Image (cartoon, rainbow, N blue to C red):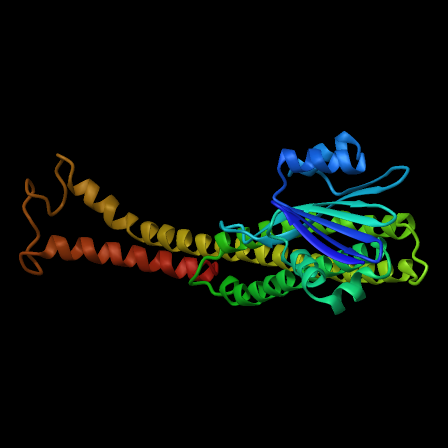
Length: 319
């Protein structure tokens, strides 16, 4: 017998003795009703309402309690954040509890509820097989995020090596996105192995083989994240090196310009003193080269000194 039902945020699909209950945006009342129906441990029910639980598997006498996290797009500058799904797996039932933003899970449930062919394909075997299909879809949903991440790295590479632009802020945002994805993916590497050993066996399917396939996908995602992390660290170091080099170049130019003005500054300081100097007002100005003889001599001496300094800096390969 096959049936579907929905009450508030609780939806249910039944097929050949297997029940799948899906709860979106759970409330305290819905969680309490669930506990009364299946006699789940109260600590597990409390975890379903908390959004800060770690990825884990708890095994009880007649069911498994699983908490998973998967990425979803973020509305702020982070680009990606995580969403939690809590799962109760029994011999002939599966309960999924999550927010309404885990689209792959929602799509599978809607297919089972609205499509007889899909319901037979997904639910006719066992509750453990439904769990496999859910986790497989959620793991596959990682790769669009990883593809976008790789595209961001390719785009920012040109900016990093362009001395006219700064990319420190963009690099920081990408590093934060990689960090979020690493925190999501890392626990699943161990958890999927545990699942393969703990899920109730299916008479019609070799479930460990299916979960090994999921593990391969997770390892591929992890390798992409590791590669992205290495790349972003290289870009960060390169950007820091280039920025330091640009700063040193600017400081060197300013220092050299200031040094070249020191002779004129020193001579001007002498002639600003209230003492008798050749060509000064008290001793009478030089006029052998015209009324600006003193100025010409001062400029000439300053130019010779600056040229000597420039030649010396060039010889030291400072310029």
